[in-house]
Amino acid sequence: MDLELSGRPVLVTGASQGIGLEIARTLLREGSPVAICARGEARLTAVARELRGSGIPVFARALDVTDHAALSSFVDAAAAELGGLFGIVANADGTTGGSFEESRPEDWVDTFERNVGHAANLVRSAIPHLARAGGSAVFISSISGTKPAPRSQYGVSKAGLIYLAAVLSRELAPKRIRVNAVSPGSILVPDGAWDAYRIRDPEGFQQFLDRDLPWGRLGTAREVADVVAFALSPRASWISGANLAVDGAQGRANSSAW
Image (cartoon, rainbow, N blue to C red; front, side, top):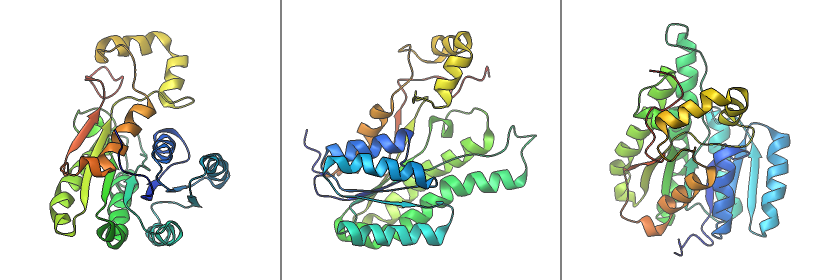
């Protein structure tokens, strides 16, 4: 299927590793110029060098997505560099603090800002560009936003992204901008948290697979990226306000016993 993304620029936050990097790679394979950002400048520079090997334009800038002014500036600079923006992907995320009883108010504020706050500011900044292109936005949420699991501040912020996609899909429809959420389950990324758990506690990891992953494996970043590319594309023109789970029918959202 031709996703009709060739020549249509897309911006991806948190794209120097993991799911974000795979989204950028997938978009380039579809012919879409990409703008990427991440906090670590050295890693981002190396990744941008790799991605430019595709021969398709790649614009990169190191920044913290919770710096609203820096993120807004990046959006406008990316549009100027790439000739507009057809799509945006709010992929950068994070969480601070431990369990609910251990967490501090500032942990909740920080976690919310990394997830919902950054996504809201990204969309707000991109509206003029997306409206001109008849484009779309995708928020990378998590099945933790619908399947309760520790840590609560993370799950609540991911649930907020799902709600934000739903409400913005209606609010921005008159501007012909689609908004969707994609919610990965547990994704195995080399050197990522699940990979470390697999190596550290192979027995516990296998028990988690047996209990909650009916396919007997975790998902891959490529499987998430393919769904994101489709959701962004004109081929998904009548999908807006949806939450697309990419989890292989996973049960619990993490390896916690409850």
